Image 1 (cartoon, rainbow over the protein chains, first blue to last red):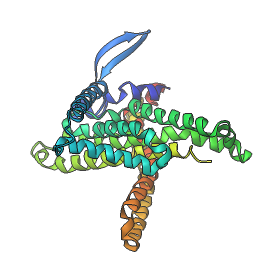
Image 2: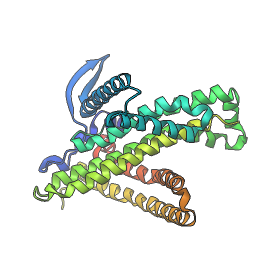
Image 3: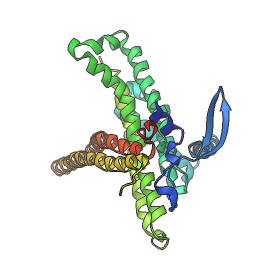
Length: 251
Length: 88
């Protein structure tokens, strides 16, 4: 219990050994303390970068909505409109190929939102923010949404069979139940571990190397840890969500 | 060397433990290498299916990576959110 609470509420901030004479910072820093229902909470770097990302995405969504509403069907669409159409078509095709023609289209909204949000969160390390997905609270929340979607769709399409399938070979039922519970934990730990390892490496490099090397060397690492690794993990998270949900449609 | 505090001993052993926990990185490395090699062989046999092979390979590699990340999580907990220090 103590491990979980310290990891969640910014225990990473007190690095103990490292921070004494170097400037290594990659932990969750708290800025503003407040009390609610007898507990002490903090406004951390995660909340701030989440807010910045949400505002960015909101402005993008409003501008895109306005551009689509004002679009003239007789004219050639501009570059911005083309980009939005490309994004929407890509996500529609992704859900259709992975979840089937029949059910796939319904989930395009959720998968698209998830994809854009996680992608922006992972890439935000490029812009000097601490990625919100490097906080276990965020990734566990995202994985719990997937967990509830899996079981909601399981009960919707398989009715009571969804429960009885767990006990099919009666000897394997503990393994089946543990497997169901392990799904959100492994999904969240995968995203969290990948993004956190990138953040830790970048923090160590920025804190420990001489300033002259920092002029050109971190660019390569940013390209790998933030852009490449972040994009792949986004793809994998959305892909696993789609695969797990579409398993519930069969039978 | 005679005056090592209890806290110092725990921190030192935790650092060694964190290093040992990252040995878990060997397994996913070998597994991902095998997956990438098989993916390259599959593209060589059937270049038309490159997109499908790529996405399957990346998904498999990401799932294989999970065990390595469990080791990483243990190392991070030992270093920065040490549960053993609270037991002193």
